[in-house]
Amino acid sequence: MTGGLDSYQNVSVGTADAGALIVQLFDGALRFLRRAQRAAAEGDQPAVALAVNRAHQIIAELSNVLDHEQGGEVAEQLDALYAFALLHLTRGLMDRNPRAIDQVIAILEPLRDGFDGARAH
Image (cartoon, rainbow, N blue to C red):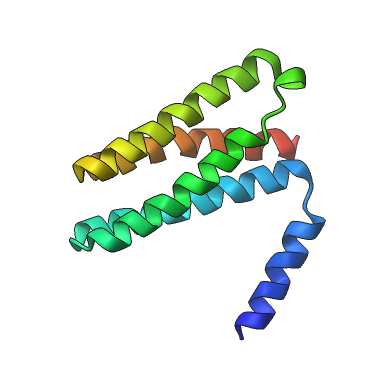
């Protein structure tokens, strides 16, 4: 069954436009952050660390794909937000502070919705 799901996801990514891929990255980061929230509520620190690490990787990729030349000030502002989110997640994980996860979700959700809305127009 997972082979079919993997094939679907590969086709989905392979045929998505750049805006859709960015939204998918946001969705993935948010999914892992929500998983980290649930794990924190259950006191499962290893699961928190794993989920935060996965979200961290996705946010780093969002930062890496920014086109600073064409994006100008907007790209710089996004880069600063991503850097803040990455640092906040790292500190929150070290301090075992689940509020850091909530705060990063609060940053990413409107960004995700903005990218999704922009590609719909």
